[in-house]
Length: 124
Image: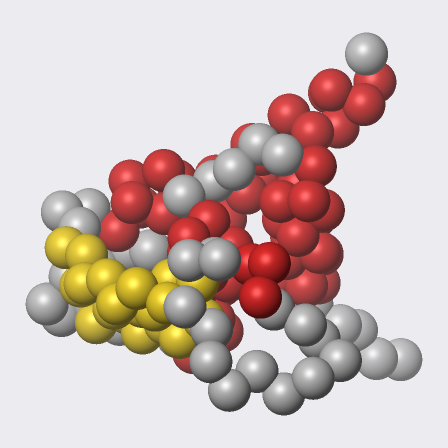
């Protein structure tokens, strides 16, 4: 019971962070990296770029993970080039949120990283 509350809290805070990070003004570099991490995790993208002005996401999606070996240099991985258009960045990013355990762990790390940056540091 407590574990599901923890997952729900992480998902809720992740949705709040997405809402804070995607207003229509200019995007900061750290929020761009957050957006890329969310989309990269959802689509299993190898190469990703977000064009905020044209509302496009271009990426190379890895088609078959079985050919990936971290011990060797991967010269060829089967990928599919995708060019997506989104209407609303916040809605698009929220639709990329996954509910599996691996994704929840990634979101917890992202939340820790982005909430620690916003806390003010006081020196004595």
